Amino acid sequence: MSEVADSPVPMPAKRRAAQLIMLTFAVLLVMAAYANVGLAMNGEVPAGMLTYGLSLGGLMLAAYLVLAKFAPWADPLILPLVTLVNGLGLVMIYRLSESPSKLPSARLASPNTQLLWTLIGIVLFSLTLIFLRDHRILQRLTYTAGAVGLLLLVSPLTPLLGQEINGARIWIGVGQLRLQPAEFAKLALVVFFAGYLVAKRDVLALAGRRLLFIDLPRARDLGPVLITWGVSLGILVMQKDLGSSLLLFGTFIAMLYVATQRISWVIIGILLFVGGAILAGMVFDHVQQRFEVYLNPDDPELYRAIGGSEQLMQGLFALGSGGILGTGLGQGHPELIPLAFSDFIFSATGEEIGLTGLMALLMIYALIVERGLRTALSARDPFTKLLAGGLSFILAWQIFIIVGGVTNLIPLTGLVTPFMSQGGSALLSNWILIALLVRTSDAARRPPPQAIQNEGLTQVFQR
Image (tube, rainbow, N blue to C red; front, side, top):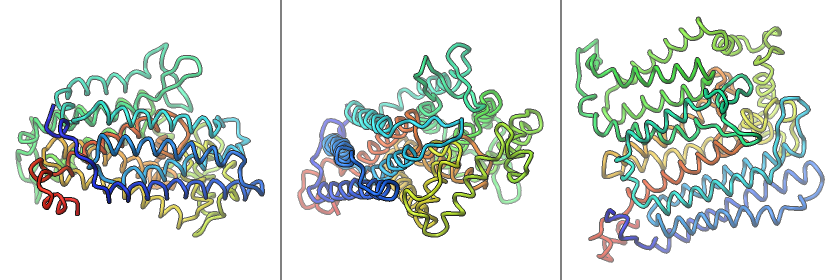
């Protein structure tokens, strides 16, 4: 095991205290929002508020204790920020449960179920930190991770195991238990991309011919990009999953740029994806329908059609009615939005907290991504740099794709808002993502052993 893993160092007292204060503030803010919803809807504080608050606070305290022991030098902002977003998601699930959708597509679970998923997510977060003491061992599993990721991606196509819901075949399940394997595949594929690009970055960085001001890569080096492009198109066509397709290909191109520093790869990636999407739209009806809804959301013929624009338009109406300051928590009409608890929880939240609240929410997400990118910049080895960058890009891409979809900036994709939407697959995979990001942050921020032994230098590094 590495020196990092074998020589744990106590987290500096000031940093530990500051992190605990921020975590406490996040939980208290969530409880205030929870009480606000109850007062607005029922005229009284929810009966289970104390139990709910103690449960959430206990879970986050457990995560904090594991973090303090097994990743003491990790970025202190990440856990409080994620706690705040996850807590707001729990509040919105409770709010929606008090005003359930009257639409037949509603499958709203209870807030207790979502809290249970959060518990399992914290357990996975803790286990990842406890057993993965040095993330660099993942580099040895590069091709194993790639194989696992691909198997998870294609598993919904299995005849007896895969399930099609709302027109997309992205689920596997037995009985009432369902899982979205693409959520976990993204983590395995980021590990694969990071390991592969560390080994091949020198070759991929070689320039071929120069076109205008761009150094094009050599034709022989286009193989990895074309393979990833083909896989993403296969997901789009066979599983009708635009979100995972865009997320997979976009993350690979972003990591490829980080590894090679060549803008030509980004341009090639954009051209390939746009060209592939246009081709798929011309050949396959379900892709064409997505584009028609995107281009003409107010078309009456598309509004009530299966997979039509009703959901999108109701979400836009909700955002519009929320205005700058919102209607107030518990005072909107999210029951009018189909699947408000899942794909469109961002719109339902925006109606009640307004543009101002949404900008604050997006700022929290941006801070999480920024802390991840800061970790990538300060990493001492290329694998850590690419892994932290890839994990950060995945989170950033998810936010862009879901916000772009519900505001009709891009076609709807079916992705959910990280840490907020109802369901287990996305929440569990994102808590594992945060654990990996925390682990890389601990390695990047940890002072060298000789600096730890010198008290004066330790104080310098703590600042």
